[in-house]
Amino acid sequence: MTTVQTKPRPSLLGALRNINLRAYGMIVALVLIMILFQVLSVAIQNQNFITAQNLTNAILQNSYILILAIGMMLVIVNGHIDLSVGSVLAFSGAMSAIALSRWDWPWWAAVLFAIGIGALIGVWQAFWIAYVRIPAFIVTLAGMLIFRGLTLKVLDAETIGTTGTFNTLASGYDVGGVELRIPTLVLGLLGAVLWVFFQVRGRARQNKAGIAGSSQIGWLVKTVVVAAVIVVAAYTFYSYKGLPIIGWILLALVLLFTFIANRTVFGRHIYAGGGNEKAALLSGVKTKQTTFWVFVIMGAMAGLAGVIVTARLHSATPGAGNTLELSAIASSFIGGASVTGGVGTIIGAVIGGLVMGIMNQGMTVLGIATDTVQVILGLVVLAAVLFDVWNKKRATGGGNVPLVGVTPGGSGEAKRAAKPDAKEPEKASST
Image (cartoon, rainbow, N blue to C red; front, side):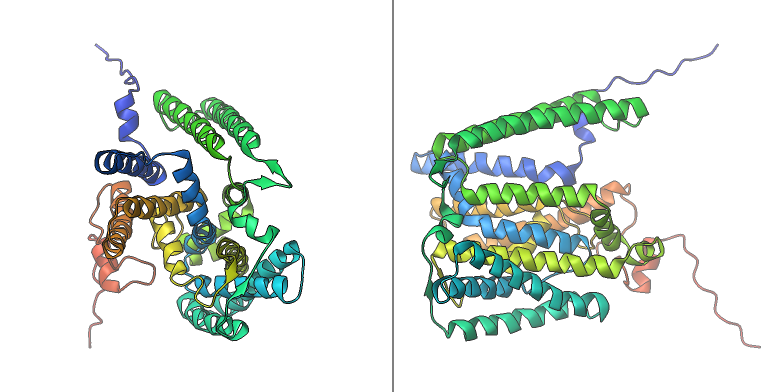
């Protein structure tokens, strides 16, 4: 008698069990955090937290951090770190203010000037990191000191004010007198339609090739939920003043660098170099050039963030950008970047930055002291790194992998601990 094996029917519970926590965990966490602050705000202060104005303010207040986080994610994915972005931001912003106010340049020239300065600084640091092979930690630590000092020098410890169109980049809601409310709603509807279209087309190709990984139910839930979130977000911004100018800039940056990371050879080389540089080099990846351009991009993003900070403050100040490098790094790790490189997404960096921004804003609204806010945010960063370690163990079946000591170049003891079946090297016998 023969038995026929039947394939179990996919279920929603099974789809939830197999969910990619690294990809969707922080999105769920962001939604839960917003709901938590909504409940607390209603219970304690009898007012709503989830409002169009609050969400818009979250974008405005954290825009420069999100810009830095996009560049920092590429740096971390490539296996490096950049501690200089706060100082590069301050120096670039100071030079844009000088060009605008003292040299009477048009606003667009001042913006391009700041971005160009950031990119040139990226070239300077990338040379030492990629070709001289000095660790990025050391080079960017030196850069943090150098460009903070240059900021103090060019500003002469003074504040330089900015005016006009330049300032609207960080807080404006219209372009040339045209409101952005209707374009925001149209963009949201178009984005939802395109999302569904590409998901359906991608699913059809996977089914045709026989490589559909997730269940039909899980795929359908993900597609519908994301489309609904896009529409609701667009309508929320539309109900206030529309998506601000900086929101459109952020959206363009996210789309651009997501495309670069996922759909270009350069993007694949970034991930390959961060995952295993030696293997990538042996596979034909030009790791030095890749690292070089990653830091150039990071410098340009810091220059753009310097423009946004200066425009938001309506002035360039010597203390601009202090500790923002830590906020960018924290946003990347909270958003799913791996501490050992090779893993992370652009959207994840933005979500991580929004998690920090929403938590900061929510606790401020509730009247929580600044010192307590800092402690909580620090614990969140630690939890994100622990989640990364746990997720790796989960992905490898929970093997005997120690929490520390398994990064590339780690100690031999840790490597042998990660491979319990590895034989001890035989001692040379003396004759």
